Amino acid sequence: MTDMEATDIPDSAGASSADIVVRTAEGNDLDAVLSIGHRTWPLIHEPIAGLDYVAMGLAKWWTTDVVAASIRQGRTLVAELQGTVVGMAAFGTQDDGFVLWKLYVLPEHHGRGVGSALMDAVVDRARETGHTRITVAYPDGNAYAERFHRAHGFIETHREPSGSGLPDTVWMVRELGHEDGFDETVTSDDTPEGEHR
Image (tube, rainbow, N blue to C red; front, side, top):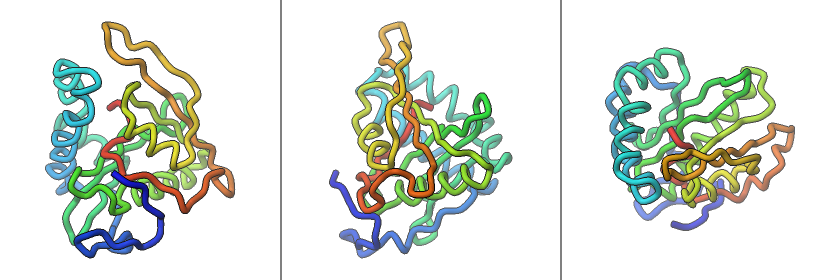
């Protein structure tokens, strides 16, 4: 995986970031969003935390009921390339703070700016709701998530022990100032995920 600029850079198939459409998910996106989770979550989390953790996460955060509720509440975004959903993000609030719970891109679409487009849309949603910071968490050892979030202006704030031999949870924050405090020409490789859910 390689770093890309946030400008319209064509990938090997000729697509560019200008071809990415990010929109609020609708009910008919449910199967596509579930598929993204079930395809990417094991790839990311099994090497870090094992099969039991993957099974627990899929059963807790990637069920039809959970994903449908997030879609119904307008808290899920999808990214499309040529009319096909290839990435998703889900957000919400916790203790009055804005939290990015999920950000995943199908592996075959990494490096096309999909993750960056989703992040930009999440930032817009946070601002629209009057929030001045975004919080995200991921399991320690997820180098993709760390690199992606650092490239998008997030700074680590603390870690929480997860217990039972599982990796610690790493928490990061991005302040939403007028400049956002990061170099917008530097992005990551569009990691398939951004957190622990």
